[in-house]
Amino acid sequence: MPKIIGRSLEEHRREVRSRVFDVLRGQLYERGFDAITLAGVAAEAGLGRTAMYNHFPDKESLLVAFVEDEATRYVERLKAAVATADTPVEKLATFVRLQLRVLAEYHLPPGTALASALAPAAYRRISAHADPITGQLREILAEGVPDEDPDVLIPMITAALGSRQVVDVPPERLDDAIEGAVRFVLRAVGMTENP
Image (cartoon, rainbow, N blue to C red; front, side, top):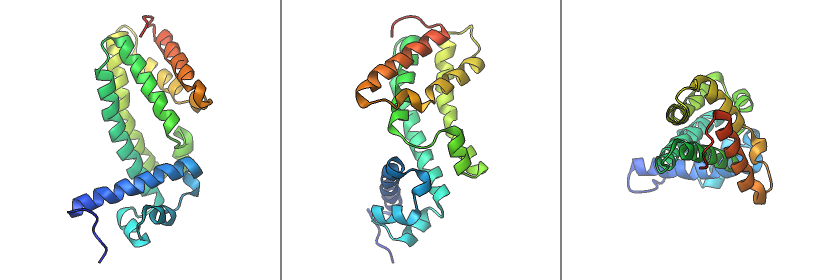
């Protein structure tokens, strides 16, 4: 019988997932999704292959579970950060900064590249986690530019913030790049106050 990590089966599951996701995060950064294997993740996480397959039957299931976990934690972080801002301009600036910081930190392939790596159902599950993020942006825009159609602005903003080229700069230039993007988005939606 495999050794249980923690005091309960639930704690064991959380610990296994945490270990696996930490390893996966590092391997995505170092190698990219295509080069990752379940056996390699299991070995680095200190798990047997059988234990790994009990939690994640295939690589796609692992990626979906990882993205769902990351997205849930990010949405909480985003809501907390935006809640500390007082004005719509500050809220949108906070939203843009955090979106770009996270884009700089994570190395999953964007949109169409990820879609081609996954089955359509798995990609739809991952995409569904963008809904609360879009909802947060919709609230900010409704407060800050109530006369503009959010269904027009949201895809334009998300397209601008989804480009890795904005954050694929030397580390010493990242803050300037992000602040330039903040100014761009604020001007694009007609919010001209200084955040």
